[in-house]
Every structure is written in C-alpha cells, then in structure tokens.
View (tube, rainbow, N blue to C red):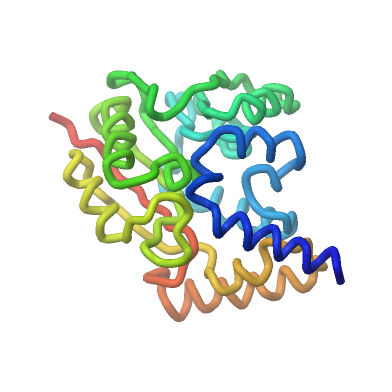
Length: 258
C-alpha cells in the first residue's frame, strides 16, 4: 500500500512540475536509464501500454495503408517504439530525439530493420522536401513550451515533407489540466496546421482520459486493465464518436501540391 501511495505522489509531483521537467532532455535521459520497455516513453502500466500501442498502430495502417518504400521521419522517437513499427511496414525511417540516452537504447534494441537514429531536436530540423511521411508521437506537446515554439516545429515538419506528403500526429493536445507542457486547444492546433499550409484530413480523440488516469500509473492486474480499457473504448468510440474526452488526438494532414 505504501508503495502504491508513493507512486501516486511521484506522479502528482511530476505533473505539478511538468513544465520544468518534460521539456528538458535531462528528464527523458534519466527516465530512459531508470525504466525499461514501454514505460520509458509511455506509462507504468505495461498492459495498458500494449493496448494503447495496438490502437495506435491500427490507426496508422488505416490512415496510410501502404508506406512501404516511403521515406519517413519519426520526430521525438524516444526508444524507437513507433520507429520499429514504421520500419516493419517497409518505410525507410530516420528517427530523431533530443534525449541521447533514449537514442542509444533505441539503437541497441534488437531489430531486423535498418533505422537511422539521430540525437537531434525538432528545433534543429532543417530538411527541405525530403520525406513522404513525418510522424510525431507524444513529442511536440513536451518539446514545445508555447504557441510560437509549436508553430516553429510545425513549420519545420511541413518544410521537410514533399508535396503530397502526409503528416501524422498522435499528441495529448489540451488547454485544460490534462496538458503536458504545451497548452493549446484542439481548435488552436488545427488552425495553426492550416495556417502553415497543411490540409487537415482527420482529427480524432483516442485513449478515454478518465480511464487513462485511473490505469496508467500503476501496473494493475491484466484483467482489470483490459476491462477498464474496454469500457473506455466503448464510451469514446461508440458513444462520443471520438469527438471529445480523449487524452490523445490523432491528427492526419497533407501538404498540398504547389
């Protein structure tokens, strides 16, 4: 019980100081060295991480059915969870992250796919029309401290895309207590994407946030996690039609041809 209480206290402490913690590479380097597997970039409940990963990868396949042979940039790759998935689908992946320890773990992870991992910040990205797909998975909302930095990051990703290329973002965009470092509403985010020259194709909510809050920080028994997740999915997907109450949002956009 004391261990459980301490975990909640640690989680609350981190959330209270998230602006100072999450946007700094030292926090992610330290986390990469202390935790293992999906807990490095996701949550303490590894069963929930597996369920979330399954949801996310299924949505990727639905949105971009065939990325085989395409050049893909994974922004904020962490320890390479999604980089490896993109590579398994046949994409030629370049993956960047500003946390050197996370990048080294990604490089050391056994994989039959070649992935070009680089220690690099999104704010150092300076590519021109090089990638067919640019993906950001939970990275921009911790790397960007305000609207100006978010706009700068989006501008760099748009520049990196070829005309007709796709941008995929899976981020916890919020203007409420759920926000990470970046505090922007869904309306503000979509407006910025369009102002920077993208055509937004879809914006959907994922990971019902009341369930996520209840399950994420503790490695609950698998049966309890599955039950809670299934109930959250039903509410979010069936009742709310993915229109609100998601902790994360999947946004798909396209860079138009000139």
